[in-house]
Image (cartoon, rainbow, N blue to C red; front, top):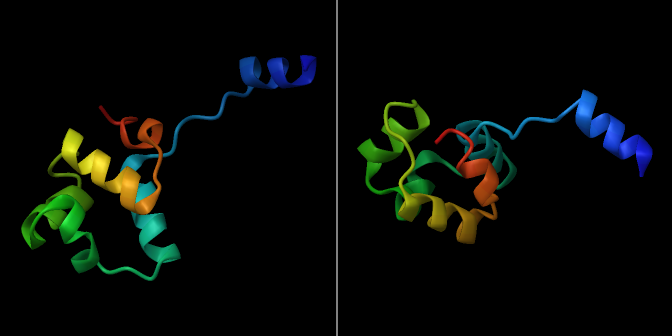
Length: 79
């Protein structure tokens, strides 16, 4: 317990970047950007999100959480 507290205090682990988490999940599941359209919107919206030109909305976060099992903490890390 003391070791864990020490490590958490002196070596905290930051939340993963939300876009990198999405891309990682895409690789794990052999997905293409087209596969994200049901969760993020049309092709242009997916492109904007993956290229960091548009942030994730609450609706997008809910969809990604429920369908790709990405934690809310990770998805909200950039907000």
